[in-house]
Length: 338
Image (cartoon, rainbow, N blue to C red):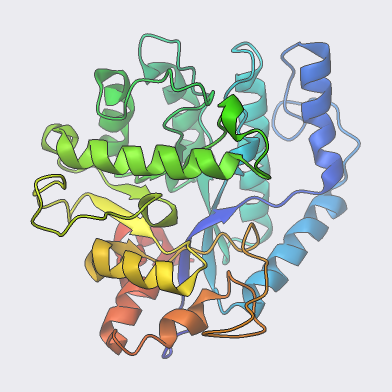
């Protein structure tokens, strides 16, 4: 809670027991598409109790960080967009089934966001629409993840290109926000860097931010809502009036979450992106488990962001509430219904 209102987190990921990923291992090893054990009668040795245990730990983690409701989607580095095209729909279906199951376990704590079986080699992205429709109409999901470059090869059309129009059209029709999150990068230069998928996050999210700002996507689709994760991937080094930056008013279409665990970076991001375009996101539990040694909240993990934002004396209480509650609820009315 913040000042008596619920805290809404737009950036969370599904939690599953380690044994659940045996499905993925068999899928890749057999090189054979298979049925999801959670919705299509496929075989599994993972029990509901094991799934529930993973979600119980997730809930406890949220409770420790004052998060009432969280949107959960796929774990981006596990989206595996480089997978053979005939296997990816099976993996995507299974991931979405695990998200739906977690939401079913705790319908008052979680809302679902879909993984899409993106094939960058297809003529356009219309091939993902059947799974998107299933997730919205059958599973009740409220958002979908958009990976700007699923295979990590920098071969996917830019997010402004016509390749993406079928998804933008359907999302606009459904009133469904798209959550832009990088996935993997297969650039061999970054191989020595631990968890180098994080480099893909930064590159692809910042590039998407620039492409959305400098092109006509939101003129073509004025009702489209897009949230770019991790404060947009990178920050701008130009002053706001510089022509290197978009001079368009994107405040009704483009938003950024607060999932940046360094306090100085988060401060700069909120000031650059503006309060009105900032929504609360933590990725808790995820990559923010390192413990702060100094600054705001020493002894707390980096993803414990409610106390951090609450401590910002340069934000008014109304502005803090806008980030933590009001703007997320505006983008996702389902928050207020759980």
